[in-house]
Length: 228
Image (cartoon, rainbow, N blue to C red; front, side):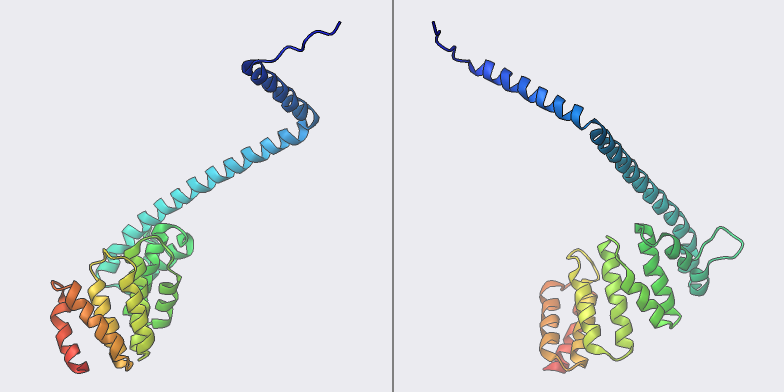
């Protein structure tokens, strides 16, 4: 005689699925044991490599920071050639060496800006331009400095349109940069020299409206007068 099939409760269904899933997973593991273990080993190796890479980067950044602090004393004295080359026979590495060894670290990126500045002060504009262009650090002030440095070089070559656009880019990197009105003023002046008076006027008016406590504000009227 057939008996009525018992209806499973939700709990029993859940337990039954859990048991089924367990045995399926166990069966898969047994069938693919070597591949699973190999995959786990690869994952562990990748994690170890990432850990090593991060720690190595941190150590490189620390070393670059220490070396940068040493050479900055020479840079601040205006000894730019020595700042570039460093002091032979001492632990004072030059900016060029710091960039070569640690240029991909954040402190190495800072060193690029000081290296570019040093070349610029020595009149070696092409070498300066190379390092300004190469800056890719995360510091917004240094990013703006790199753009303004490029602008200054193009300005010295009388490439006023290009200089203006780089100064303008520098002023737009971060709203918190206290040099923004100065960058905007220089952008406006270069637009004016390039014959783009409309763009220049817009920038001068923006300075008058938004930066009335800046040094640029005190100079902007004389340039507006030249346009009008």
